Image 1 (tube, rainbow, N blue to C red):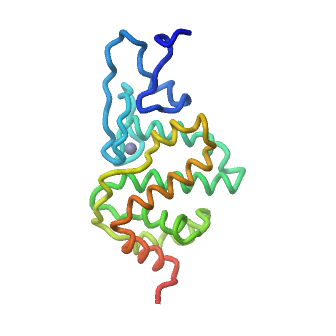
Image 2 (image 1 turned 90 degrees about the vertical axis):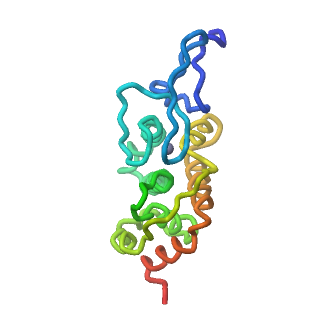
Image 3 (image 1 turned 90 degrees about the horizontal axis):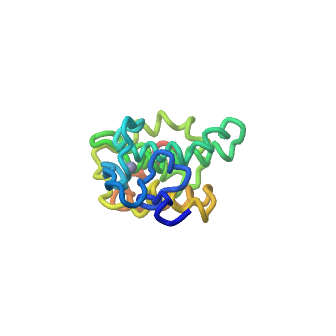
Length: 193
Ligand SMILES: [Zn+2]
């Protein structure tokens, strides 16, 4: 296959996503792209694809679905995979908060990343965290890592490592609001005086 025949990735998307995000071969009209309103990833518009995640472009939420499909398939049978899926889900959601909604996913990331809590314990504190999570926070304007970066690196780095570093990066990007998020996380844990 000559390079001209090889589908190129937009933003280096992972091959697994190429079924829906392929860029036509050289010579074709440039495909339409869209910028995700949440994480800012610029991806090819996929006709007919609708977003399954509020606050995300259809192609971005589609790429997330493709990227974590394997985790979803295995999560029921493997607790480590289930924890990893939870971490990925919260990292993604913390980048796609809708304005005015509680920043629960970002507070959850605080628990997993900064407090070292097992993501599988999310269910038992979900109610308290929803109550404590701050509303009206300004989301970061720039993200160090998006799902497009994660998907692009899957060829060379294993998914668990990518998800952990992605979650850490998203938590770090939230640094202007980390005090409020920590307070909410600690209130949910019951560790605040
Ligand atoms: Zn996005």
